[in-house]
Amino acid sequence: MSVNLAKGQRVSLQKSSGESLTIVRMGLGWKAAPKRGLFGTRTRQIDLDASALLYAGKTPSDVVFFQHLVSNDGSVRHTGDNLVGGAGAGGDDESIVVDLSHVPAHVTQVVFTVSSYTGQTFAEVQNAHCRLVDETTGQELARYELAGGGPHTGQIMAKVFRDGEGGWGMQAIGAPAKARTFQDMLPAIDPFL
View 1 (cartoon, helix red, strand yellow):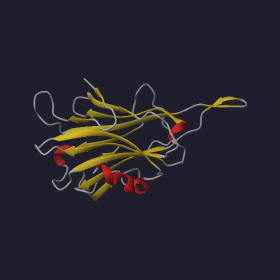
View 2: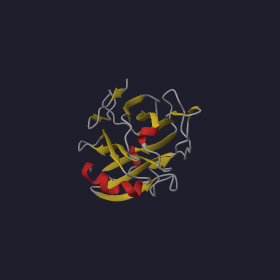
View 3: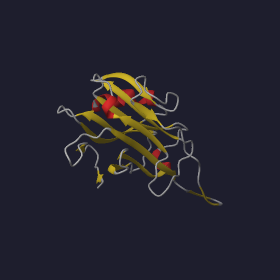
């Protein structure tokens, strides 16, 4: 059963049996919003990019994005860059797989971001979501709808974090940022660490 998360809401990543999840997938999906023009409706392609930033406390440790698809330790893997989106029907256009059981002990949180590499704002995007899936069973655990549009070109989507009890939790963040790349977003991430 999936949980729809509101901005700032947290959820435990423990299975109902009490076991911790081992492998999760953060999926990002989107479609370009149609624009009305003088000659009818048309849609521009939008290149959103999902990134995962690994932090040791408040210090960046590694990053996974379209030019560095696997973390240095191999625990986080980007499945590939989608330049246009539009999977539709709630599907994922880009995914990042995190093997929680192999994330190094010094990494305390993994922050997921999305940025508009081509510079379009989120007002030009529709049906955008991020979701967390138990990769072992395929069950959707949590979903966060990236609603609201707006003049920003980046968003800090969510993070998974060590919960202090040997397990992991997830927090929906949904904070806007002016960013075309994850590097542009680093100052905006700091308050959520």
